[in-house]
Length: 501
Image (cartoon, rainbow, N blue to C red; front, top):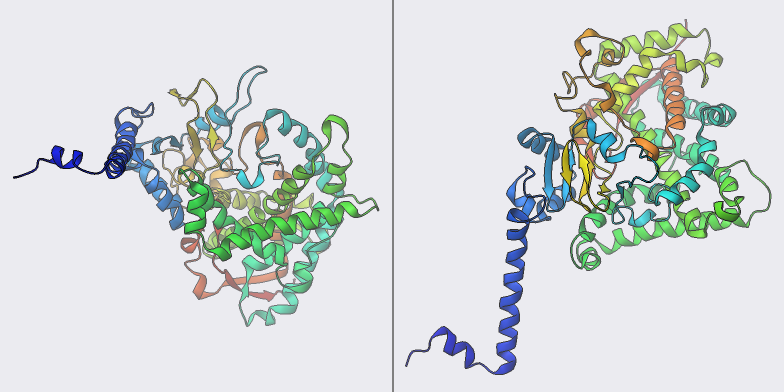
């Protein structure tokens, strides 16, 4: 006698039948989620590939690859200025998105807040704080990053830049052996921010090597991006345990442990210092920083105050050495503007208009933050670029795809500093699209420091040395991998001390 599927099912023991029902219901639930996301989700009318709308898996795989900036660029080329890149996430490359997502709001108006998952590892810092705490912390920190503060700190900054020049002279073998410049730039900027934050450097330049804490930062950047992507799935922390190596997780945690030790050691000191820790710890009452805020802000200051600046210096060095006409114009400007090296300081380098345009163009071609730092649409939703977005939608502005899009910049893949100096070919470009230091009331607090360091270091190198690119670095730019920040390959160049006329 043949049994039907129904009679066979009900002939099972009760426990087995229950398990079978749970499996069927679970499978139906899993199937229903992508169906809902594609055809019934509030974001269903936004353009983008169906598979990406159905599940977050394609976006996560892309983040793991390190090539997310190029894939997002391709999606925008296909689907337009706004693309649905995950069930609950939109990517924008329209310049109006800066103000719509991150712009100043009137009193009483809501803001699109920071995404708590993205800032899980810095949840007590100024960059991730809610509106009230952000105002409190930024008010304390901003004085140390003002233009006047940079002038007050000029002797300190100059001393480390001069040490860089001295160390390059000692190690360059008169231009007969290559120097790996991403390391030298990082050693310089980490020592500067270490002194500004804690009143003492990390000793990177002195030892011509990375401090253990600094070494952990580079490992942390990639792991942080992967952790963030995995946490957006159910049981995300379990996925991290499964997919991220034990060593990577250990190093990720070790960075924070060293941060705590560094801060706690600094707090135990009684002698006053003119550093950021002194400023933060002296606040009282409603302005007082908690211990967790001190830890997270210290970590943030070290990473944001060094890595992005060193990245731009690496980028501008490569761009100059692969664009000889631009390189020669920059050299001519630097060497004709000063009669001796002692004239090169934080004020005098501001008059180097062509070199400033070179840095600006580097920030466009090679933005130090190539990916998106997402916001979450406020309760009740918001209108972004003329379209309603429901609340809790992740809103991202991907800088590298944005700056390489022909709708925003003429000849977007060409390195042409003249676009920032009034060249008529670029008169219709919306220059305000370029916001490498972010936008609005939460823009990068360290912008003045970054420009001060970049101008001074680049001018001093071009004054002191003749430099050329090592052949093995000719594809350096293409070999960069994008996570939250760039994972940079070695940049090898020849450095030959010049004899000034």
